[in-house]
Image (cartoon, rainbow, N blue to C red; front, side, top):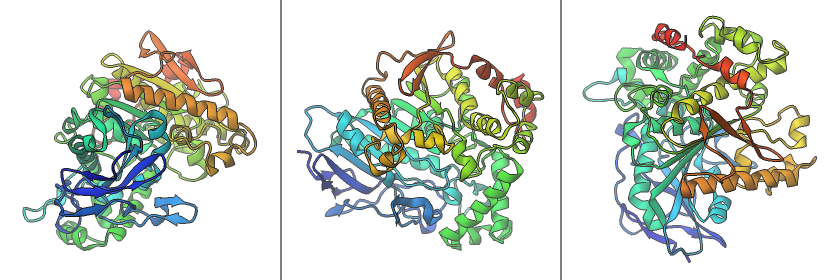
Length: 510
């Protein structure tokens, strides 16, 4: 039986034992980023004496309270003291160290919480350790206020990314005490969490902290130049009602919730003005993140670890209904493509019959945000490390009838084993339960094989430039060679050109 009390490098923690797993919740991996540590790089945990209770969740990162939902009518408290992670291990003892899977949650770097992703079913089924991580969001994690630093009060950039590195360093120091193998760590994430995975692959400080990576629906080219990041930070400061001379006072004395509300409003304005761009993103500062992650991957300068990467067939239907974060109308796509190479929209639209019908515009918008950069990741990484492509096509009948199809984030349900839960049962009330269970088995078997060995199951071949094998998760799950080649070729070279580097990107795309 796995012990409940564990001695970590910082002190003893006491978890909670269940029938099949032991859980440790809200373990600190860095000092609380409050007071003088607000908007600073994560600092070491202060060790404690005695036994620290780790049997309940504490704070999710500061965000709109509705973003930290952890159940029906249940929300997790939010606050700045959020740099914690959760560990879930099988209750049964093991004679050998277990593979470790570290999950980074999505939510557009705006909302989300690790407490949704304990991974208990995954841990038991695969005999692995699952770690889920909180990190700073929004204005406290993804706005670069470093321009307003003073000698007395500096501010750091790339805070959310730095938090993720600090969490992985904690795993290296401590996971062996929980029965995990620090030499076999897989990072995986969905949406913004998948973008974090791609970013960590290009972060020098993360080298050696993980050994395999899985990116589910990664908007892989979200990156700010230093100049654009500073421009956006000035907009955020204006939303706070401050000017540069008052920046230190405004950024250090404004409440965390008010600061994030102001930066969220600035983000909303930026998204309306420039659909397809996203200002909450890591900054290619030439230091902590030397270059845009997608550029590093394409050039072969990213960490050469085995990678699974893919998208969902109907990514944008969710955004069309609820969150206007993806360009999905003819007008929005025209505005978006106006910042790409000349003729890109015409070339792409020719591969999507029916454009500019609303349904076709939604599909192009989803593929612009997720498929387009994922194809670049596949083409760029596969010459340097084993790379495996997938597309998630399965949708229960109820979601097809509702017009969602295989929408964004639906793949989380089978990966975490939620088909046989109230949410999975609700989605399959109109049929498809057994088929969804089969998809769940296929995804989990492949994810777990990859975490254990660096390869999915043998039926899923690696992606190469002359053999673009793609696993289609559907009923039945199958492998296709270069699905939709015309669409793949049409997206080749399409990049948004930023205000400061547009000329270079346009030339490269040609």
